Length: 280
Ligand SMILES: Nc1ncnc2c1ncn2[C@@H]1O[C@H](COP(=O)(O)OP(=O)(O)O)[C@@H](O)[C@H]1O
Ligand SMILES: CC(C)(COP(=O)(O)O)[C@@H](O)C(=O)NCCC(=O)O
Ligand SMILES: [K+]
Image (tube, rainbow, N blue to C red):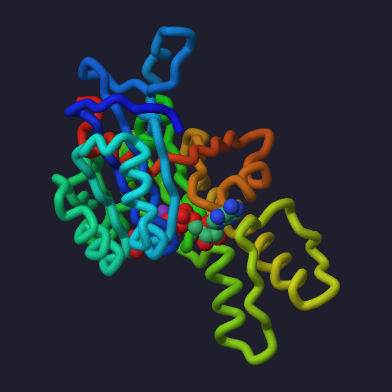
């Protein structure tokens, strides 16, 4: 882990999902947003999206058990200001209690720097909104975008050419789908797959591989179909941004010759940092 020098403009962005909490330390230098990555002695040029200098992805239990304390110490206990975006109310309260000595800004969907062209702006998940804020930085002017977040749930969201978040689709993620099968049936086991790994054979020759084939290719197929249907409403080809814990496993199966898909691991964290004004 690199040494990060303390600065009053350091921002700790936190994305609290239903499975894991993602933390990213964003450092600002001279009011501009740069990474601490160095090329020789010179900071590399500011990317269009802020990149966290340090990150941690952990379960809430691990954080409470000491991982948060250890990580804050390891990054130099810089006492950054904190921007917290959570889709889990219990996890949010538990984290806020752990961080009671810090200045914590709680992010909300309806106050984010993006137009929400949805029926109930206060209900749309703040993670979806933050990822869209970041996607608005990445997409080319005049091009629409589709943001796919493969986490506990999968979300596929459409951003119009004017930058407004139009809404999208929500479905169970692979791990959740497998767990639901185990819970709601008598004879299906709870398959453990921390890492989805390589694409499985679509013909599983016993129960576990059959479940794996179903949840994996079901997720890939659902994402592809949702992108295709959202794309049908557009005049210009969308740029697709993929994020979330399981995104790397499915990324190369989503795109094609006429569809560019970019995997952006810290999309939501970067959106939190942008919404909290890291480079303003
Ligand atoms: N190493 C991994 N490889 C593939 N998938 C993973 C890995 N770690 C986690 N996942 C998947 O990512 C999901 C968690 O992703 P994440 O984006 O953190 O979700 P959330 O935001 O809902 O907490 C898990 O449910 C699991 O399906
Ligand atoms: C859809 C979600 C459950 C995704 O959560 P995640 O998979 O990141 O844990 C979350 O964005 C959420 O609780 N949304 C609220 C409802 C909505 O977005 O319309
Ligand atoms: K998420």
